[in-house]
Length: 474
Image (tube, rainbow, N blue to C red):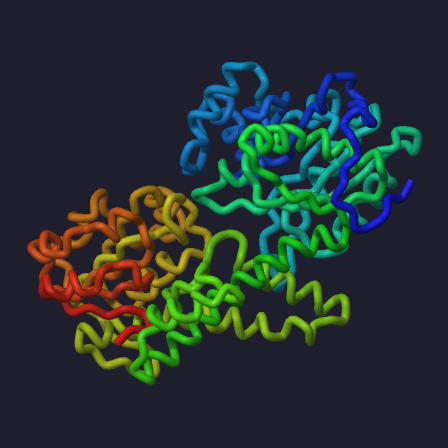
């Protein structure tokens, strides 16, 4: 039966029984990267029986041994506790997942295609086809990966093609909204849950799969808004949210460009407009721009899909959002040349003979993720311009070394800044924000600093004798 839209009233748990016969749905998470592993561990913490599935044997071995293969605060303890409880296990077998699970969440990557801006859905296709060939009873396949609108309908077609009709396997969509560094809270205490379903059974099964979240909220006297909608809307929610956030970040960085030529201070500008409740102050921090594994590729894939659907004009502004974001990286190069008294010519500056410390490699603090990280991209630009670049990051060095093996990396912040002619702070780690500028000044060859995140106390650094340059600041 088709359910009406919209609705915010899920069916009672008693109306659906898990096909496995278990008391509550057994869950599998297909793909144990950042998304799938985090969800698998946290849902086990909520009391569900869970299997995390991946074709990467090394990743599965590490998770099964209690080792989280990426940095996310609080996740290590939850992994060890839930492995010990027996509720959580990991496997490379899709046959095991099919026999075990009632609800199968798709959590694989959807990277940008090598031949264009669109999303590569090959991992989604492989995970779905690998699962459904082993299904022997009714199940619900739920997408969590960020995908182009229309993907859920396509997966329905795959399911119809490769399963027997009497199994009545269904598809639903429930986008994720994880923030790296805060992902455990985002799973256990989400600010909303969105589900795209076509039947009362799928709606009830998804409610049962999230009942642990609602129960936790009830014990803490909170409410978790639930939006039940259609496939297309559920798919669009995540990319629309990311497009909005990217636009907000690029807007304040565009204002930083204006402030730089007009003599204004973008930090004061952001504070003033952020007091307007219609605008708010979140994501109004000017700097070197956004990065990571989501925003850059998601806004490009969104544009590509809109073009395919004949709505490309509607998202043309996202191209400028992307351009503004990329320009901020070159702005650091310009500031470095200015502070080091090097001419910035048509081919950029010649920074040979200089030593530059880059503090930060990850795209944000409290993460080891260096995918499309502005900090690491700027470090590469400085090195390409001839500088001797030394990079330090509290968590991201190993991943940075794999991504940019030609750069030099240091084990401590002091080692990175020692004898440096210029220090560039490009990720707003607390270690950098709270660093003692006077003490660092004793280590460097020249007290010059580029604050690529506007996260430093400019007055304190200036009083310690540093020549300070921020992004969009006088």
